[in-house]
Amino acid sequence: MFELDAILNAFFTLLVTIDPVGLAPIFIGITVGMKKFERRSLALRACIIALGLMTLFLIAGQIILDTLGITIHAFRVAGGLLLFYTAFEMVFGARQERKEKTTETAISKDQIANLAVFPLALPLIAGPGAISATILLSTQFESSWEWRGVLFAVIAFVILLVYVAFIASELLSKYLGDTGRMIMTRLLGVLLAALSVQFVIDGVKALVA
Image (cartoon, rainbow, N blue to C red):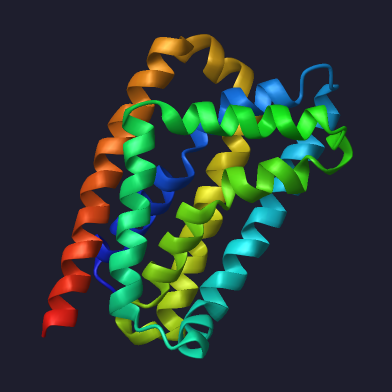
């Protein structure tokens, strides 16, 4: 029913925006001193909460836009610009630094018991970029429930990859190293920049028409 390229576009947009590989070293920093079962429990809880948040915006995103009187074309331009900003941070390394500062703030305030909610689920996994991308993607194919079902499966799969990255974070950090993570993040940032520009172009064309 839906073209493969639309599904792949949704997958890569969410994958690059959430960036499971980039989150892995941050997860290591958050869980220092925790036992293995505690880390797995924290990772699972964070991923479930993030999935719930993104599902909420998947279902209610269009309703929120309609309530505020925002056209999807205008949101597509704004969301594309926001995703481009995220890509810019990834290419120049600013995003990783910002996420690490967020993590340090959370720990310094003794919020360890709620790490699954903040900063893991929000804003590290289900951040502004991921939420914007979810709303943007949900409005394709006239917001049909069939497409939303497909998109939910894509979101769930990406969140699953995040969970796998958390569980394998020590191995990923060991084999990729700082240089490997840097190359991966910047490459994904370039891809996200191209996708975000396409969102803006599509939105502008629709507004002009």
